[in-house]
Length: 239
Image 1 (cartoon, rainbow, N blue to C red):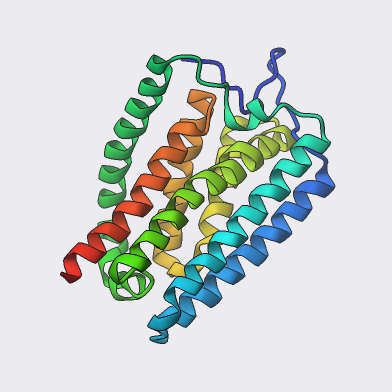
Image 2: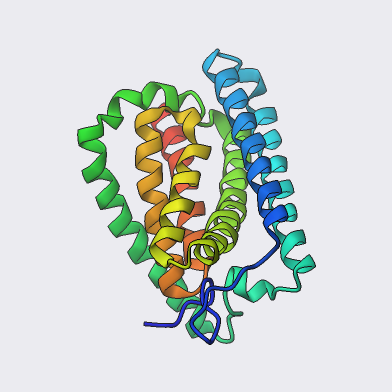
């Protein structure tokens, strides 16, 4: 197993990435981000299909603004971006390795989510979730762009930044993973209480992956792929 670049300094102590004030600002921004998601979701569930693209682009912009806020604090704290994202790829084999890890993680996580989803009766929430999924080519293209954005920005924010910050605060890797996962689930509360529980579990899986791998890149790949696939499958089923 590789030593995590996300949570540990070489001495074994947890490394704080930015000031507490900056973390409070990020948490406040996540609150605004979650509220924006809820407004968008409520708008789409109300049947405002003509504004679906606008809703996607609105959330996409908000995601990148959150990413910029996170990275600004890291740079201001003179922390290496590599501690947040993981070390650079230095060869094709390293790229392929992370792709393989992402694929394996996706298969295992999908199975676990299906297993946990049955007792939570997630299938009963299908109609509410379907209202947010794309219709047609233009919406699908915007959805995929949003999915890739979510993979990059959310993994950077929750696993690359907040998780090690919480580890530094609690001096505990499991606590950091759990706190980040709970916040990740709460930020998706617009999908309903049952989905919030499932997304919290999903966030914990991503947290374990990032801590073990010392990089958020495999998580980014899986996150972007899973969200994109949801939209593609929804579009195909409608045809």
